[in-house]
Image (cartoon, rainbow, N blue to C red; front, top):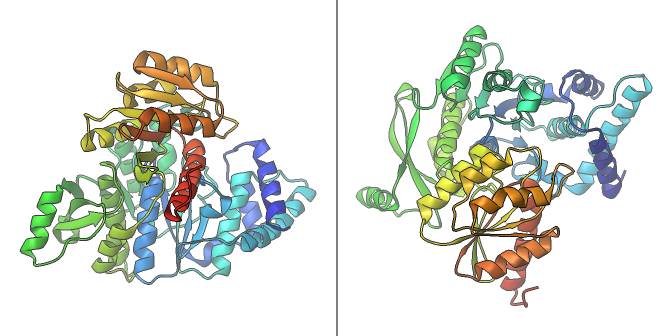
Length: 458
């Protein structure tokens, strides 16, 4: 298959939806020679923050000189974003070539009378095959959904990471916070250390599972912690040390782990948003666990990685056409809550205009209640997904919560209207679903390039 044909085939697999279970992926990987056993891994799950933690860990490993793979989902613009080696997306030609190999295995499985693997299982197999062929030393693998029956849960990692656990995907994961936590804890393996920022009932379940599996457990707030440091405090600390502070937009944190012998240590983080402080702490603690197990990770690599890490559409700041913009997927109630907290931490006085799209199977009322202020203006538009849901219904949910609501079925028109309503004075926020903001972000990047070349804005 060429690249276009490979995209058509993988898209066609999407019509069968998502089906939890490990029998199909195990059969597929066995036919492919079990590539997942040919490199070391870190496994990351959680309700929110798993993508950011994956990005930070990947950057730490790369800057430590390790040949590193990274598998994430969903993508913002292209399937090739999901599979990366040493920071580079899989080339389109390689994507097509390896998917052709995976397709041959799938065709053989189906011909033998077995059930066809799902789209996500095929992409997971592609990632493992690519990492094996590229001979990566270690790969950071992000769970797709839950943990226990997710198709990535065929690996035995060096460390299992559970960022947090809140109420999401209840229809797929048992309907209670206890069942959701048990699913996340399903990635815990015998004797493999676990790092988590979970709390309350989920933490109790993770703690019990770790004990049953003889797995050392490192808990945020107990074994390690992080606190936000103001820019003024950070500048003063650098001045006392006779050092220059890093350039660019940063937030700062103090990381501590008496267990690991780390006294309060000032770190600079390129990713913005108050919620990234905890995510950074989880990533740093995971790196420390790896370092103490013999992996060649040095403190300068951790510091440098946090200063330069990128993770698009997570409280990402952009300026286009004189307009300040924040892009954040914020795809569930907890994500909406922390987006609101991060916006409020930066500026409560400035008026806000949202271009907002939320999938129909999400708790829209709870998300909107956590996110919106009575003074906000909202332009609703559908995410690019078969799960988009009713646009009119979303607008009805927004009306009691905001000052103004407009509705556009076309994403481009919605974005243009958002620019008009913000007018360069108000803050423009793109949020609600990665299936919406990914496409809008791509358009904004194109406009930025055009501006840089001195061209007229389209």
